[in-house]
Image 1 (cartoon, rainbow, N blue to C red):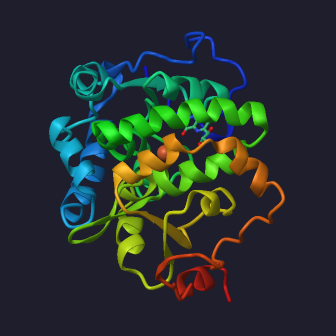
Image 2 (cartoon, rainbow, N blue to C red; image 1 turned 90 degrees about the vertical axis):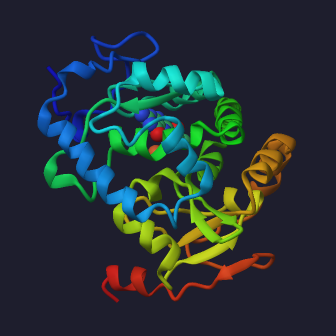
Length: 294
Ligand code: HBI
Ligand code: FE
C-alpha cells in the first residue's frame, strides 16, 4: 500500500526501515490507484498543451524519447530501459528528501532520485515536497539529453566537493538557477528547461511572458552569489546560451578558486541587478510586490 506521506514528517535523517542503505525504495508501481494515475494525467494534459512553444527542444525530445505521453504514472522499470540506453541515466525511487551527500552520490553515478508518491487532488498547483510529477515529468526528460545528463553527473561530483569545502549554499544556487529554474536561448526565442518551471502550470507562463521577473544571461560566479526564493515564482531567471555552453563552463571551471574569490564578496539580493549583468529583461517586480502586500 502506498501511504500518502506527510511532508512535515517526511525528511528523515537515516533511511527508514523499508529503504535500502542507499535510501532507495521500490517504486511499487502496482500500488498506485486509479485516482493517482488520473492525477498524473490531469497534470500532464495541462502541461503538454502549453509546452510546444515554451519548452526547450531538448525537453520536448525527452518527452518523445521516453514516451511520457503514455497515460498514467510511469513505471520506472520501463522508463529506465529507454533512459539507460539513451544517456546511461536511471531513475530510482526514494521516500522523500534525502541527505545532501546521498543525493549527490546518486547524481554522480547517474541515478536521479525521485519521490514515488503523487500529490493529492487539492495540491495540483503547489506542494513543497517534490513528488513524482515534479521529479519525473520535470527532471527526467532533460536527462535524455547527453549534454544535460553529463552536466547533472558533474553537478553530483561537484556537490560532494562542495560538502568538503563548506560551499554547498553557493553550489545549490547553481542547481536552483539551472536545473530547477533555468531558461535557454533558442533560435525562436527564450525557452524553459528548469524542472520547477516545466512542471508548474503557472510558472511556465510567468517565467517567459510576465514583465515582472528579471531575465539575465548565465554567469557562473554571479549565480553562485545570488540568493533565491523557494516560496513563490522566481524574481530572477538566468538564461543559458546553449546546453553545450552550460556543460562547457561547468566542466572547465575549477570551482575552488571561484568559491575562494566569492567568499569575500557579498551575496546578491534576489531582484538586484549588478555591474556586468547582461540583462535581457529588466523586470518590473510588480508580481513580487503584489504578493508581499506592498
Ligand atoms: N532529495 N529527493 C530529493 N530531491 C532533491 O532534489 C534533493 C534531495 N536532497 C538534497 C537536495 N535535493 C539538495 O542537496 C539539492 O537541492 C542541492
Ligand atoms: Fe526538482
